[in-house]
Amino acid sequence: MGKKYNPLSIVFLGGVGEIGKNLTAIKYGDEILIVDCGSTFPTLDTPGVDLIVPDFSYLEENKDKIVGLVVTHGHEDHIGGIPFLISKIPNIPIYGSDLTIALIEHKLIDKKVNTAKLNVVKAEDKIKLGNFSVEFVQVAHSIIGAFALAITTPRGIIFHTGDFKIDYTPIGNSKPVDISTFARIGNRGVLLMLGESTNVEKPGTTISEKHVGKTLDKIFMANPDKRIIIATFASNVNRIQQIISIAEKSGRKVAFSGRSMIKICEMALDMGLIKMNRENLVEVEHIKDYPPEQTCILSTGSQGEPMSALTRMANGIDKIKVQDGDLIVISSSAIPGNEKAIYTVINNLYRQGAKVMYGSLEELHVSGHACREELKMMLSLIRPKFFIPVHGEYRHLKQHAKLAQDLGINPDNITIAEIGDEVEIKTKKMQHNEKVKAGALYVDGEGQISHEMVKERRQLSNEGLVVVVCKVNEATKILSDEFIVETRGIDLREGDFEEIKLCMAKSFVQLDLANKPFDKNQFEQIASKKVANRLAKLTTQKPLVVPVVILDGDLAIYE
Image 1 (tube, rainbow, N blue to C red):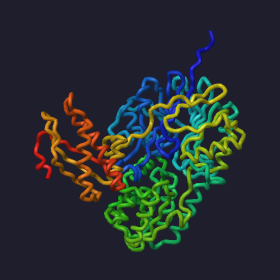
Image 2: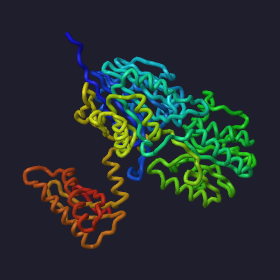
Image 3: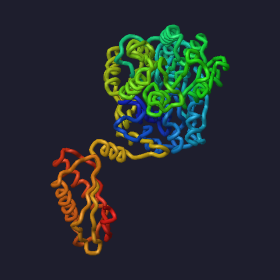
Image 4: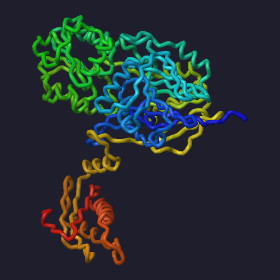
């Protein structure tokens, strides 16, 4: 008898058609290997939401098949969903670099999740998880301990680039990219490559992190008489190390401000990933005890996050009070969608009397993602039979697919995936199977809210609210002609109220109660749609309509 054929497929639960909440499931036979489990930040379209994570329904339905979770690196869009996944499916073994695992552990502690099995791996380590063999390949990125993954399956090698750039002169604990390792993997023959696409629109190559250090050094030298506050990503340990080294060289004390900045920097100091004279580290509450020109504050809030330290400073509600003459440096680029929040913070900092330096004025940030020439190099070294671009909005994926085609990959062997797609890798082709349940879960405080509730919040904020209170005699099945209509965020004319009452009466008639009892929920559903549609025609607005039915009660209590 021949060897049993097991299908190999990739299930995309996040991170395609978007930048954020990366989650990919590789399925071989009855086994599933998960790559990354990230989150993304809310937007103006998700009012009141704190965090967005992938929908885990597919993994919950197949939880007995999961052999492990391998993590490329410790950024939020790759690890932010892990506590929520583990709370639903406990005891999944998780593998990542030392910093990645430390960051995950802190997240699990914060969420009071203690059922994960955390495992630290190093570059060039190989692990066996069921029928999958995973080799961790060191890459340069804007966080220490980032990996590409060479995943060997019985059907062939799947190479996942993770987030990467090709940096020959990295700083701190990072290592130069090992081109020979990529070539070695490519020479083994790669069945499928999943390639990140973030900077495919940018020509050339990514500038080395050392470039930012030179810019910051010049800023410190040019401003010896000012207090310097620098906002950057807390996870960019190498940049933080550069800032600390420059501050110490300038004779300045250093303070960390913002929960994640304090947490990650303390962790990195304990792990030896950040090196400094501890005598130069000052609690942020005591930074005021030193002359401003002898201090440097490292802060969160480079993306204008509402409760971050820099936003609180800009609004005058932080323990650090912005003073005339302060120099505030924002060492990051705007994540798409955050521009308005960032410029609001910058404007408010200027109002407080500070001078602000940011990306459009100075070269204060370099990307951790490969530009076009680096993407070309990776494709040329790996030489995959099949290619699926990932980690990008749809336009990024299309352009990366075109780049691969230009480099000689058969266009029939390239496909664009969307969230919920299952792509099966056959001998001669890739095939899109039936979609799986996928999407987003919205985290509000300690709980999760539905997509429908988010839509209602959006409708409330954009169109307003109409509450219609009516009275029904359940025994006689008669709708009273008394109504109370309350509105918020929408102005109605006198005639509109009469139209609302008429819609309620028509909805009641539509129930056809001659031979069945009155169903309160059904009536409210019909009335809500009918009133909303009528108001849309009368006012060109579509407010959220909430009918409230009082059974044999007194409407006066609502007045």
